Length: 164
Image (cartoon, rainbow, N blue to C red; front, side, top):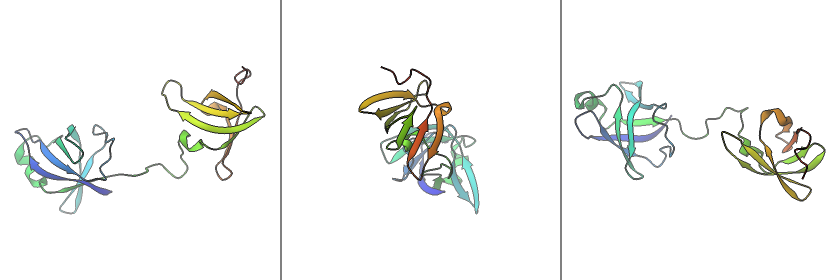
């Protein structure tokens, strides 16, 4: 856990506070699911946000769940808040973007993975195969083997997918 903000002052009558955000504060903070952690008497207290409104790069207006009055918030004034920052992936996990630049063999044709287009509906790899650019679906079923040390991937694609 890394320090990412400090509760600086009360704002309003419903327990809202102003946070001073540190440069390390996650740009894409998902306040609905991710708590900020405050240390109170040596204990880590998770604080979930009901409202999180950025005010520039270095501050935010926040209302924490269960801290709905100024009196409840007072003990947290001046407290530093922590959150998980950085790469939270497990050692054996990877992102499709990690495969950009890998050598690729797809149905016996060799080339390179040149790009990845992320989309929930249809994620795609752009492959450079024998001098032409081809888009193929980036789905788990097409992977025959990934060699991370050798930076190579083997794909088995449905017949006709590489045809012009």
